[in-house]
Image 1 (cartoon, helix red, strand yellow):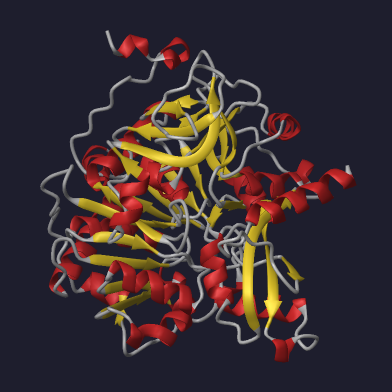
Image 2 (cartoon, helix red, strand yellow):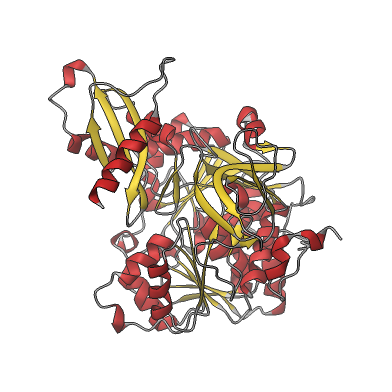
Length: 557
């Protein structure tokens, strides 16, 4: 009886089970496909094909290799690479060995890597040679005991079928102080292994996020949650074994993991992996390989639509085209339909803590203008902003909270933040929205300080902490300002130390930021100030700065 009370069941897709039962870790669904369709293509990497049998065997070999290095159940394995077959092997190999995967942003600089590696307590890092320089700078300052290095050359065909980036063309680097990825695989047994015993208790993943505020936190993801999100996505999008998925959405990001890797392999489909998002290469790949499904960051689709020769390509193969990270306008949705005439288009809303499938998602054939979608794996409520204890009726604005199987257990080693955000089994998102009579969610804004930039979560305190390392900065506060392409971009208001006033320019701060933080995170705008607006208690009043920026925006209109 309770199930029928959920208002979104009025528009629930008929093919999607209302309750998802998962029986095994994601890697074991992949193993089942290796048994059922061993010769089916699991991965296409610039023309290099991996069957399900190939991929499953390589994952077992790596798992055994990690165990041979001393990996114990619950040990953390950092993964530091762009999209490539080695990422898939490392991710599932670590999990089969009983380890916890910790994907690191390949755009991170050494200071950012040092924090997350040490916070997670990672003992092993699996990375790619051309990114190793940033790890090398801080390796002796970390908890790492072993570093395993691969090269994209390991699996690139001699003649790639698509253009490759300069990084991919570099000769393989031999790093004698590290373990070679291919050698480890070749010297390890292919014996089937899976050290996961309890889906609910055994941990699969630490997904780093800012949570709601402050420095990055490791969202603790169980095997049950990861499998629930992946199997749910398969049902929601009607993924089948004859689908070809475009795997260019970053795997280190939770959306890429669930929607461009895990759900594909659970459903027995093929993933066309592209290491870098280069719009004309992506357009060429779509035309050449005819993918049927893509869940992309909104900015990726915008970049594709802005190609001057877009009409030279054929996007008619898409069955579904979904976006996430920032909302899409009516005009953008219309352009997407024109570009992909056979595709159902939609969007989704989630957080790292909800594994990209635990938020709200447009039902296939059920798009409602201005709304993101309906809950799928989670229950969602809109609560009053003042106390967070009163559930609001339809169409009233409040805080979005969620509860369900595809939700993180909390934050690693962050009991206070966990207690603040995870309350009585519910995740308090800090996001403001409404739910209509049919359960459709509209996102209205962020009640906390999150900046959503190109689909990535940027937290002011994190950027400020990095900026304070610059010798000239006395005081700094960061906010997000409107950006028609990225959604939002960080802007830093800086008070310089007296001896640097008039001597340091904004361009120098931006250039320094390029060397010390990920591209999406660094401030795109700098404004020097003599003072910052503060409360009587001395707290910086960000809202005043946000209001100033909004006033400028309204004046331009």
